[in-house]
Image 1 (cartoon, rainbow, N blue to C red):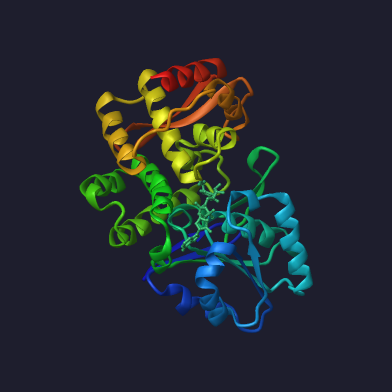
Image 2: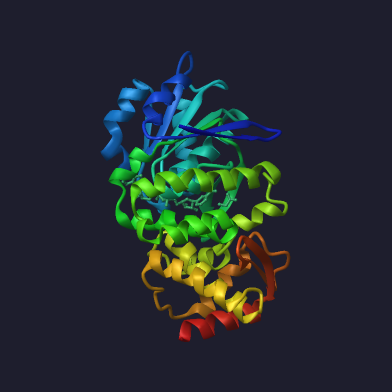
Length: 349
Ligand code: NAD
Ligand code: GLY
């Protein structure tokens, strides 16, 4: 088992990585409290018996699986169920699922009685390497992604790779999207990804690389929990990813991160922010995971959603975190029309 800690002024968060850690460690948080389990319909169908075995009679709220559930209506239903369950300040909410369950569950834990204990049990690769760690919680509202949320560190995160055995290959690809992002931020991770390019989808390799990615994120969160500066780096590729995700839909967050990285890498190259050699290396990795970049029509309208990105300092500019060279990145700020022009010309190729 590997243990990684994040100490912030608000909360200490202990992340444990290792096969079997869910069943071994989750019971330690149960004694003497009313507890509440949030999961989704797919995870419950696969792991309902394990959930019952670990949590006994604690109420289990089952969200319909999918990003469509990550909204304010679901959030208030969950809060009502928490009131009905008689949870109190010492209660624990266990979010057992992917990033959707983790994000909305973390926000419900932050809001209920102004904050109860939260344990994240991520069951997708994406949630294990990224979303369960670092305390970003949110729901989408209207067409705007993650627009209502809070920073709220989970007390514990149990990263148990055995959940990945039931994860479809496509969901593994989504998690690899975030892992490739870490590679573009961290030279050691990039070395590992290039050396193991033939094993990227192997669960044994993913068990090795996952703690490396979490350690990278933990260090960033330790230094900049509230995303005043450094933490923006974790949003590499996300400006275009979120815009396409909202406008086109149809793919998952991790797939859009890869597509966003692909477009923003090309923009970085055109702007002279990265070198052709480095861009070619990252493009190779992106395409190895993604297969091919879908052809999109109407990108001039999709670009509008990039205007809403939280990184932008002004409404007429678009901010992107782009790879610069091995292990380094840069923030690229472009006038909105220039950004839109790049997207249009890249989509036409
Ligand atoms: P998800 O939660 O929708 O899970 C993907 C699919 O896998 C779902 O159908 C789910 O039911 C299923 N699933 C989950 N565990 C499974 C298992 N072990 N076996 C089989 N199926 C399983 O999506 P996700 O990709 O995990 O997360 C995406 C969300 O995470 C987005 O809403 C995104 O905005 C958010 N996110 C948040 C952060 C953060 O820092 N908070 C970071 C990245 C992404
Ligand atoms: N996934 C981006 C962050 O946690 O900051």
